[in-house]
Image (tube, rainbow, N blue to C red; front, side, top):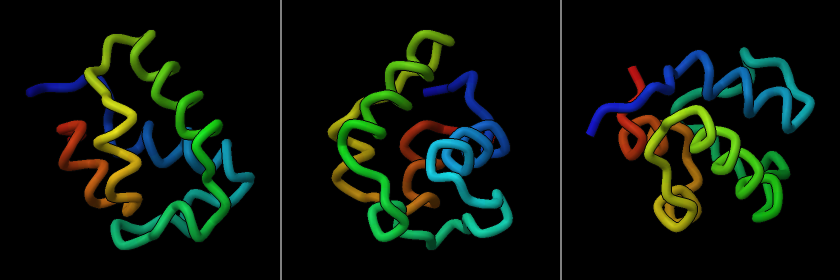
Length: 76
């Protein structure tokens, strides 16, 4: 599946949500360890869906590593 989301966009949104520099987010970053909770994750999912991305909360929550999210979403 193709997505309108890019890796850069996902990283920027996550960095903003977690109040961290984007450079701290790598593919092996566990986002839960950085403070991402289910409420914040749902907020991101809704934002990305509103922009046309096909994103599923359960898919992202089941593997909270950024690299896995890139694969699930099909971000380039």
